[in-house]
Amino acid sequence: MTLMTGNDYLDSLRDGRNVYLGGERIADVTSHRAFRNAARSIASLYDALHGEHRERLTAPDRHGQVTHRFFKPSQSVDDLLSAQDAIELWSKMTYGFMGRTPDYKAAFMSGLEAGADYYGDFRRNAVDWYKRFAGNGLYLNHAIINPPLDRSKAIHDMRDVFVHVVDETDRGIVVSGVKMLATAGALTNATFVAPVASALLEPGKADDFAVVFFARMDNPGLSLMCRPSYEAAATSPFDAPLSSRFDENDSVLIFDRALIPWEDVLVYRDVKRATGFYAASGFANLYNFQSGIRLAVKLELMIGLLSLGTHANGTQQFRGIQAALGELISLWHLLKAITSAMARDPVRTQAGVVVPKLEYASALRIQVPQIWKRVRELMETALGGSPLVTVSGAADLLDPQVKGLIDAYYRGAALEPEQRIKLFKLIWDATGSEFGSRHSVYETHYSGNFDQIRLDSLTWATRFGQLADCEAFAQRCMDDYDASGWSRGPWLHG
Image (cartoon, rainbow, N blue to C red):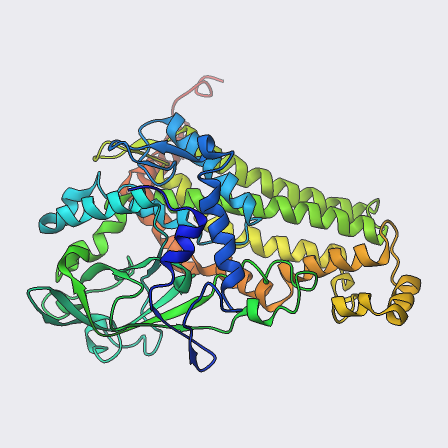
């Protein structure tokens, strides 16, 4: 097996998958205007694995397969630092605006072989899928959320909608139901389907829902229902420089009596293993690592845009504007510091691989939604309505008569009219467009809902004894004194 090139990747998408958008079945996502530029963006990542940066991006795994440095398990701090560099390099190719590039799911897949014993009778499948993933550099999405139709009902009472086993054959399991939200699903090679970690699966009642499996995107019985395409709506690169090439279309996966071969199954009718793999796999430790590195790259772009925008407005010397830029820079440094700590101060798992500490991952997980919300607030406060002071489209700049008016009245403090408009259209696409608004939703919710990510932090601190240590420290403080005065320490005889 060898890593895909960009052309190999594009060819892999031409497999007859059932992708639906705008009332039609998309015959070829690589040529359709709703997907083709995003597909090319991903293809460029694969080409980079074979280009001038291949030494920074790739390394052999224990089988001798050359793969992306984050696609294989790390054995040391140096491995994590190398993976960090590779993730950052890839992220810079999309300016941090593609959240589910192939290295995201590597956070789970890289440890699949090392932790294969967890899957019991399906151990061999875990090993084989790791080898295939690392060897070819497969692009996977995941779909772990049930549609929010009636949260008052138990999972096993939603048999008509949620993914579950409907039959079993010699060839595999037959599943039906819906899973969401498969970000970039139409552009991936396979999907990973499982219950969410917090799913309440009642033994004896929800066994049919306790399944974890892979499904190739051309798996018979699998259909993808896509949201509207921002790429298709983009009129030109000048008008929509981000959404025209980095739109990871989100889709709902519908399984209609889809046969999943036994070799693609990891967990079958086992309520404990179906959700326990999250903790056992190190996924939470690693996906937050990848996401934090990517978001730092995204902030690097936003800092540059804010600085250029304030210069264009002639406000760069205003105290409040400088304070906003300084705060944005501090958020960037915060992300860099946390991800650096995750790489340099890791833990070794029972499987013998090195992963970032879960407590660091948890801290980052809680901060990310707040950071991106603050980024948008700072951009909007510092720039005001400037991103709206543009023109309807690039065509206006190509019309001599209209161009004359633009040149006369759209000039800025530091930029020619066309460059000023170009800058603020990019800022708008990043923050205010439908694409930009989708990114706000993504950064806020991709890692879990507001309460759950905080409850997980408490659960992990309790499990690791950290909460008990804090309580003991507080008690130690109170033990220094009582109602009669000091009971110990240097204050006793003062």
